[in-house]
Image (cartoon, rainbow, N blue to C red; front, top):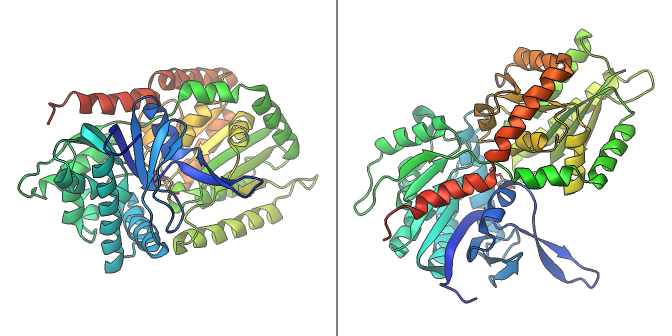
Length: 459
Ligand code: F6P
């Protein structure tokens, strides 16, 4: 299909693609699993949709690709632009500032220029591929200037922006360099969506303090909690392959009575060291013993060129070593199994099936789809979820064992009450959360947003 033809155009920093080299050395694009992709891709199939973004390479080709029925339009970026836009303003300025957990916020003026340049390139690509009166759906904090940039190029399109991560309260938000340009960057959108009511309210407070330039208006703001493809994950987790892998994993971990599990992108917002320290203090206090319990922590390496992420990796390596040296079981079994690698989808699902208690304890998180994946994988209604209220998921997964973020005693107590919960209660809680997610799935999320956009008067 040529350009200027697509009735639905998605824009995100990263295209949902990775390149695999075949035996002849030829690179083939494949849809990458997880995160934004898993949430958005199912909503696009069969909708004459295009997706604009960076393909993860430096100075790559801008030729369009058809992957699984979605037309992908790569925006080629140089290494310098990626360093300044992605590693710089997006992940060293916006990411720590928007999560508001006291992490260091860095800023350089050249990062801001690169951020604006990458946003403009993406906006230009959208303007090229969108059909007349198309719907444009922009994703996340790496792309906050795209709405107003697209609006000035294409007044005819209907536009939604969805913010996947927290939007902080006014004092924190106002400390952002170039804050008014970022807020007004969103003003080209018709609707801005957020994960939690608090995010929506914080955006509205920021908008009230930032008048729109002439020709633009403050967008409608609404809360749309993101979800997962519940039926698909449940089905995949019930396959014989996954069940078999789960059994093998437990054997590999020394057949403990109880498996505690953490699964995260290795990010300082996820509270991984704090979680392992809670486990360590439970071992120290004698409330649990390495004779019975193993903590499995899987982490996918992330943003590895950013100093704060490198520091976290180092901290985790030494923390795991310390706990394992201090508390081996009498058979020499290690209390912490730490897998710092990207896992194949089936292995990831097998982890969720193999666990008894899943500990999701971010200091702050937009939603946290890992918590929802764990629930989707528990087809027999067994298992207990410990969930920090710092995650958006805690707003509606209220049958989890909830705990305050960043409070070691609260996490300690929550893990203990999860371990002590009787099977009947765990079953009732899990069944209720599964019922909720079966209805509030990713298709409902996407159709809510796209339905709201479709109901706006045509331009
Ligand atoms: O949820 C936040 C987010 O940045 C998404 O936009 C993205 O899909 C995911 O985390 C992974 O981030 P990255 O592209 O930096 O690996």
